[in-house]
Image (cartoon, rainbow, N blue to C red; front, side):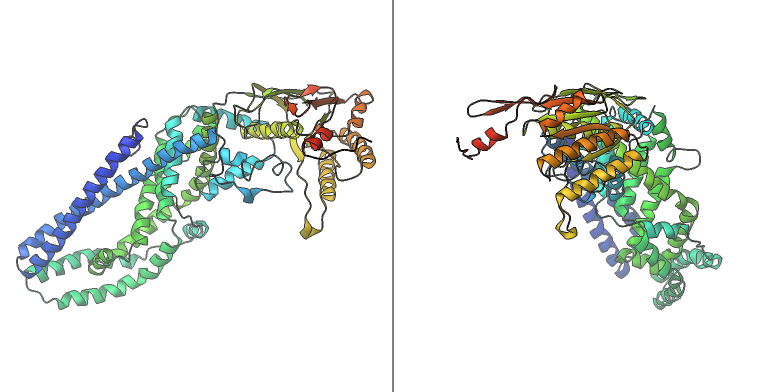
Length: 588
């Protein structure tokens, strides 16, 4: 299906596919009425016409399969075209149409709550190309995971290679979007696959007897004058044998995955085994589907066919065949054979598909954003970035910043005027660190960092349900940071406007004490504050450096350049901002 598609002519291919599907539908309808007419005329008048029935039924089934292939192709093409629109929306940073992942927001997490990883206009909306619950959950766990340079390097190599395979990335995502619709849990099905079930040996007799005897009775009745009553007796006899497998087949039908899930897995495995990879990690992931022991595409295609048959056993056409030829026995035997031979692989494959979904999401993001910055993981406690930008800001308006902290510089005190960019810069640094940990290229010209665990405290809010004030919430957050640092973890922290919920004197005194304690615990990071008095600590503490964001005030406007500068902020703008908002100050 995919091999026949020209990705540069999707609209034309879709139009041709629709026309072919419409033609096949008409042929299918003609054959259906032909079968009906031949059956009526053959039974009532010309028995020899009944010899055409097997041929007509075979053609009918063939054209049904061809029609279904064209409808699958049509669904696939529609998703490819929709995905083009999604790419454009992401480029323009119009993210409201995408899943926000707000349910994954977690206040107690070391950094997820403060860096716009989830929610409206979030990194999750930019990254997420997964198509089912398992893939989405795996992406979330990677985004929230502790920083691990070795894992990041391994993922980075995989992402770099995948990002060069545009058609592969699009095909993988579009297949999932086309066929995975309403998911259901597979946990019970996996338990069923692990259970001990065997095909009773005595059932081989009716399994073989059913089609042979049914066909003989049908021929005898139609051509040799046997009474129709024999067919009735045959159906009653068959009911005894069919009853032995009716309940287990129904239970299997209830437990089996949705047909769309299995169809997607079959397509995905075929796509994976036919792709060539150079990266070691990608080859390892591919090996689960492409090895000497088993051929995943055939196994999954076989499961797709069985799922379709078992879940559609109660339609009229199948019921007639089942009553005459006892086909449920054969279906149950084939299912047991598949289960005992291949059932152990399915759970493993689904887990592997989740990894592929995440890697393809990250590679698609990297390709769409044309990311190329290589992360240098340092042995020391350093960080150095050049032209660092926020990934959620439109590239046309994002302003890059250079920033560095040496081994000896443990704390940056960040001061600045209101709305000058302090918080945005801290979030820019934090979210790019998350990108680096995912194995992605940060939005920067260069990016070097040591092996830290990120910890933030920016959005501490009150909780009426728990009778917790925002100030208490911030203190609890800071305590967690101190406990983490004192436990020996190398923490890189981002603390925004610390202790803002108390009076100036206590805030300055508490902030100074916290700075001493963070350094003593081995912490490293940035603290933003409006308390310019704290900037004097640079003269007393050799591990603290002042940096700042400035604003330029004119008669009626305040201008910002959003560029970080050395030293403390020389002036603040709260007074002017309040004037611009209509607050009049008494000159006296």
